[in-house]
Image 1: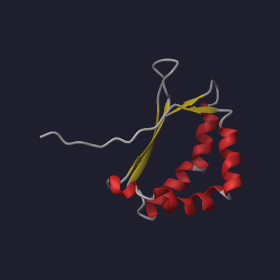
Image 2: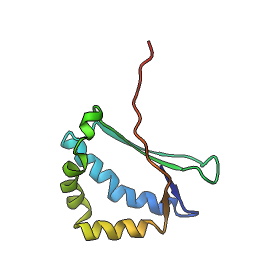
Image 3: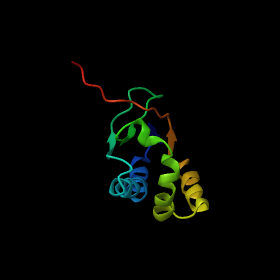
Length: 109
């Protein structure tokens, strides 16, 4: 859950196209995730997010060790850990992380 700073939504989305989308496509190829989505909408309040990054995994167990499995993808897409940190620091200027959560899809019977 992300809140882009005023006037910075397009800039943030351009960055996501280079990093997040590329990394998620590679993770899909490697069967680390099933799918991903980026949702964009208006914030309902000043404290609300306006961009939602969603990643679908097969099950909760698929998240075990995900960081270690995803690190080679991050190095391939974003560079060294120092380069990744520089990108993250730059993004602080254009967005705020509002939170994250794991959710499960349910089927009602």
